[in-house]
Length: 190
Image 1 (cartoon, helix red, strand yellow):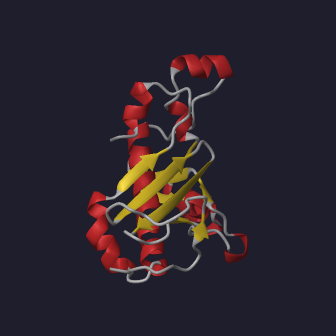
Image 2 (cartoon, rainbow, N blue to C red; image 1 turned 90 degrees about the vertical axis):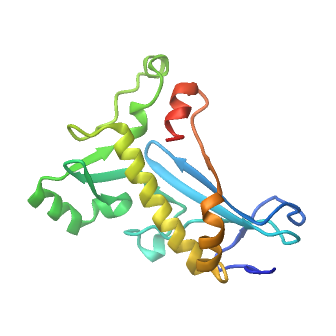
């Protein structure tokens, strides 16, 4: 069944030919030290294989749309309050001052293996007091997925129904640095 015969903002990548497998959603996530990005594909049997890069992150002006969003999170105690470019907006900065919110920067640095930190002179990322890396990653992944879902539903023909049907079993790949060991990789499987 041809659900998506194309989409808005589709970016064809070097995958040639038609998809021969089962219909599915594939999601790729890169949570970088300073910037993060998401790409997805809705693969349909007999259809072309198009990858879509998420380019409309909240808080980033339409004229400056990018495929990446700052890896930032503001929190009010252990509760996530704001993410990405929005976390640096004047409105959120004001709320943060009024409510004593903390800003988590470079959370990925907290996960690097000790030998990698020593070899490259990496300092720990700045996490708010009492906030664990798992909380930051969990909240930030939730932010990425929420926005990806909305983007998918808006840009794939019949996207809402397709997301509901295929997202429970979508394949997700999360990028990690080459120097990460199994322990750090498993952290991302949470």
